[in-house]
Amino acid sequence: MKQIFNIYTLIVVVVYSTLLHLYFNHFDSSKFSDDNGKWGTFGDFFGGTLSPIIGIFSIYLTYKIIYKQSEESDQNEFKNMFQILFQSLPEEKKEITINKLTGDKAILKLNNDIELYYTMASEEDTNVPKNYQKNIENAFWSIHGDAKDSFGPFMKNLHNMLKFIDSYCAENRKKDYADLLRAQFNTHELLFIFYNSVGSTKHIEFKRRLKKFDFLKDIKDDDDIDSNLRILFNENSSKKTKTFSFCNYHITITEKNCA
Image (cartoon, rainbow, N blue to C red):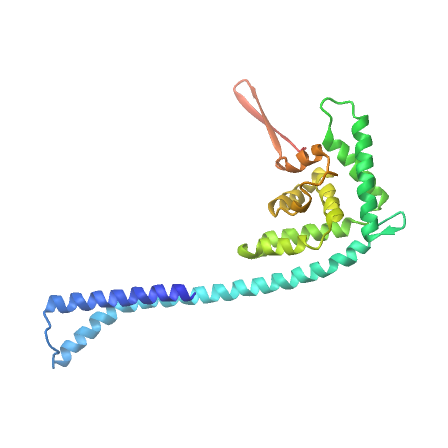
């Protein structure tokens, strides 16, 4: 705001100086006049010329002030909502249960189970090439049932926080908030988030936001992640289309499978 004010002040000064130069040059005024009428004409000239410029600047400055206040209000609202969601994460993590295990221990158990189920499904898959998306989905829904969807609220809250950052946070602060959120998770929790992102084709937007904020960068080199699952995560999440030609007509079929 200060920079904009300085620029417009400079513009007004330059225009004012230019008009003074043109006026005195044109009328060859080498001395001050004692005629009140000439002073009135001089004032009308400058007032009529500069008033529109100052008026336009005043309108623009008023708009910027109102816009800035609205933006600050929106960011304060964002911070309050982010804090509420942020504070609920630890409690929701404690609600994750499987076989009487809770919290971190339950997440470790779920990671081990999903790796086991996925390995078994891949070994039984006779397709060439193997359908890795289907295999990880089978594994994901198996652990989903074992845990009785106890991790659902935790994952939904995480996605809502990423969505909230993506949609409402100021552009220059999005990375800071995403990094702050990411720092709350340890390695096996990030691995569990990874499995959730590739575990279903319904999680396209979740995966997109994880990739956008590089949320899983701390486990990029994790040897526990199957290379085929890395490929699934890095593949384009948008729907695929195929076009067929039939008697000069083009038919487009959209595939819902994002794998």
